[in-house]
Amino acid sequence: MAHITASVYTSHVPAIGAALDLGKTAEPYWQPVFAGYEPSKQWMREHTPDVVLLVYNDHATAFSLDFIPTFAIGTAASYQPADEGWGPRPVPVVQGHQALAAHIAQSVIQQDFDLTIVNKMDVDHGLTVPLSLMCGPKDPVREAWPCPVIPIAVNVVQYPVPSGARCFALGQAIRRAVESYDQPLNVHIWGTGGMSHQLQGPRAGLINREFDNRFMDLLIENPQAAARIPHIDYVREAGSEGIELVMWLIARGAMSDVARGAMSDVARGAMSDVARGATADVAAGSRPDVVHRFYHVPASNTAVGHLVLASR
Ligand code: DHB
Ligand code: FE
Image (cartoon, rainbow, N blue to C red; front, side):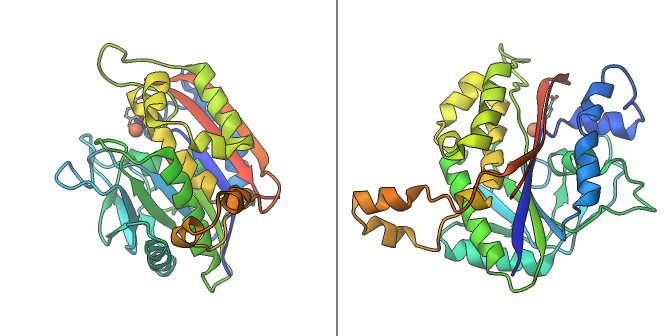
């Protein structure tokens, strides 16, 4: 059986990728950002998983605005870094894990989540910048990322976007899918994007440290409450692009302390309110350990937030 043993959360600011690729990491502006990821890179080297499920958003790169899946899973053998207007980032090709991806698609769709199956796509900074932050710069010719990656793309660009509650429930469904895979894989799940930022309009440049830190507190200690934050609160408090934070809830929903049994919503709907309340927020274990927490402003137009949580 496969297990999800840890989750990673990080912003995906494209300028971070450019700073890495252009050798600017030691510059005074960038040094504190990269220093904040050093403990995580060390942890990643010591706890390299067999597969990473990487929840991210495409920025009208692979999907354009012609077709916009709410939730999509990559089932390809590999993914090329996308050309986002300045050429593709000079990073290794991302290797997929087709067998596990196909299994997750099967299981999650049968749990009533409509995933779009993507057999071919390029991956933009939403996916490659988190990999660079966690794994360090990699020569695209001589080096590879440390493990296969399954991209899980979420639409947070074109309205309507999915709610935090739905994202959290998707994470729970992904956990059940992974646990029904019959190979002993150690799986990590990453939630990326955020934190507060707004890229356009009169509020461009908005940063809200208080919201960001409260969100990280809630995500750790009371993720069910974080999942109830309505969409409009993200936009008001964290800016229009702050809505990317709903993707962190997919990763958090996949951790063991909030695991739910395989009961279908139909069966749950048939229960009395009292019984439903008793099973609603079943904590299957203790809260995860906070391996690392980091917050920094500014990086480009964005507050950088980062967490590593590991199951006890
Ligand atoms: C920036 C941040 C993003 O999340 C993004 O997708 C594009 C740009 C920025 O801070 O500039
Ligand atoms: Fe973004």
